[in-house]
Length: 109
Image (cartoon, rainbow, N blue to C red; front, side, top):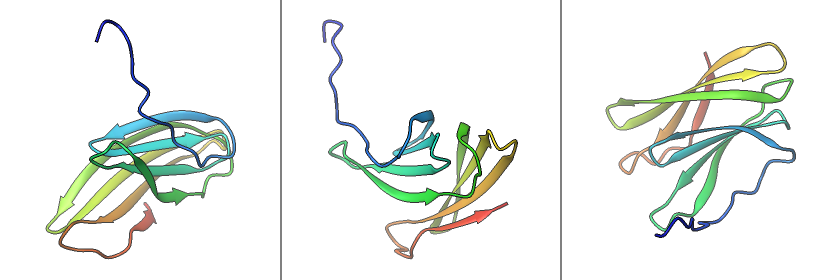
């Protein structure tokens, strides 16, 4: 590789600067100055698609952390977000698995 990095593309969707990122397996979370959190999934060709947008903060999202939980055929992503609106919020995001193709669901904890 000789010290070179290969650009594998970029993600578009936020209206202002991205301030934080968190990666969990094939998922990537981005927090932005536009007050949103976006959850992206990377496919086998390294392309990313936006699966979920969380837009319930009143200020820029400054920090993210996340962890996966499995319940039978449902995958949950716990998302912790800190914003300039002086809140720390916890989200529980449901993702369909191959066996269960229901829509995603977001719950504030």
